[in-house]
Image (cartoon, rainbow, N blue to C red; front, top):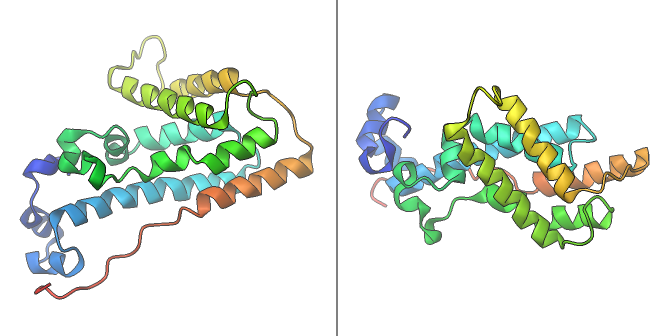
Length: 212
């Protein structure tokens, strides 16, 4: 997909590269669009699984600025995920249309449950609603991802430093800096893990008859 893009890539190309027959591909995916959607869903699921693993390992990773920092690095390190996040028409083709939406991780980041949970704990600034902060956080993240295409390596030379700048921007704009008791910190961490773990992975392909 990275080599040819949506418009040029065919099922024949996929089958040839995989060393299988074209009919074998259709046993699992009935159309090219279904196959492509499955590929992007796998990228999203992989990033979310990594995020959940980080949340489980680090009880402070649930805070907005730290979570978005991780997600930024996950997006820019995966070309397909980056294209999906930015709705790149060259790579996605008609999958960018609303009726073909595959932007599951956008919905994950903008999860009302997550932002409301942070707001209830006093982590987010009270003059903005959780929905407003969710929107602004996603817009800020998208801006940083888009800026990667023309990142100035002289002023901010590494992607890690740019991720730090994103985290600082969100922390100063939307967070209160409130410290929680250790027990409460662990409780909130487990609640955030549950929010993102519930997103789950995309269903595995099922065999279907070539005739269908």
